[in-house]
Length: 149
Length: 430
Image 1 (spheres, rainbow over the protein chains, first blue to last red):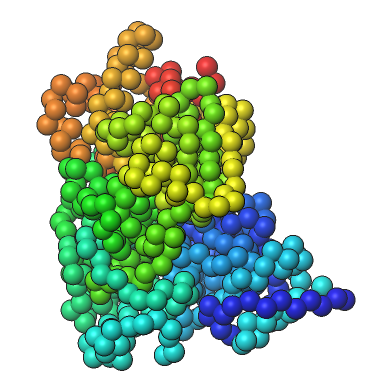
Image 2: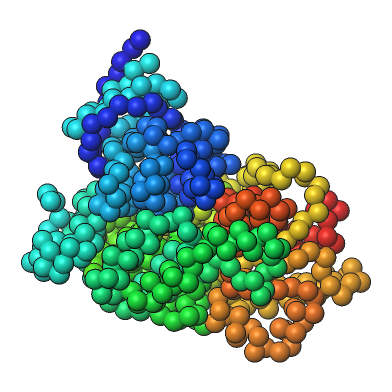
């Protein structure tokens, strides 16, 4: 088993360990979460038909690794609602700088709900090239991300 | 809390609770938001807000809880605001009993939520449209205005076609800005943030379909700012009504298929007219769009129907909402096509959507309104996207000319010309 360490910037700091789900493309938050949330599912399965990396895959509780989010400006509210309902990913790791919609979502979750989504951005293209689905990811309070697999 | 932004004394006081705990949380959210994007300060907004969240979906209880906190504290926005379209309209959008039951459960909180919005500062009962910038609706910012808007299609329009300044704010964050009357200054609010890092060269043989061109641009540049060359050849150099409508539809597709908040069109949009190619950053990437690329993009849209030749059960035109001019144009288009096919009525249950004030104006044009109704078209101010977002409606074979609706639902996309033909003939493959 190999380990690689990456350093990013804390958006919402936290310490946790979890399983990676990787999207090489931008994640459309509304398209990804809406179907499961509206159907009152206990676990979100990605419903964005345009994103084969997350489509029909479990997202709740995963460490979602992605370049950025895209799509509707309801996205932040969707993330916040998912967090309040315990359906959000446990962490979001961005290879690029976080976008305004995702930033709003994780901040709203942090300030207005008891369930924060640990969030780090600027992890770099190398991070997204290296990390694969099901790898184990450890996140430290200082924005260090350790990928094992 | 620790923060890096330079705040005024008043802003610090609010953050520390001088106006209560809820206002402190609102300020904290905006300060954290600004800090993430290295905003140095807050700037005042100088036009009414537009909110994206218009739907009282029962499952969004977390949002209703925040609204309750705000209402109970007697907090209001600085100016009256507009909001996205309502999700249901039983009068003009046919639903079966099962759908009505599902909508009743899903949007069971609609009335309560609208009450919450009114208490915060909703403009009036007709303020429900994604195209608040239509002259009939009247929430029209001026060039250079700082906005606290959400609704991706409205933000990209305000930035690009009007030249106002607004970030792609999320739902709720736009409300917090409207309450405090300030927004953190970063990205599209700054001169540097409005520079283009992509040059899009349109080299098609004819005017590309707005919704496909926007989709191609959005999927390529994602959240970057594109400077589009070659489009003025088809659109001309005047921002007249038809051109604004084209840019409205193109922009909505750039925002939903990617995350574009601002585009410039060479020789056409306000900043491109003033600053020309100085808006393009050094080493900007280039994306050439020709006929083959338009075709490639369109052919790659996944089709979510179980059977490709299914007879469409419903058609939505107007996501984002149609302008008055577009309602006139669609009436003319259908009239010509029906005449050619020797028919009096269209063959698909079709809904055209537009802002309540636009619909009201269209209804006052007796000649066109009667004609369109006689063709069998229904006119509504519903949000088609919200209509489609349930397990029953999503199984319907719905067709649309909206790339936004295609992206978020199981609706199948067709160009204006294709969809008009399907409406009249009643079949997809003919």
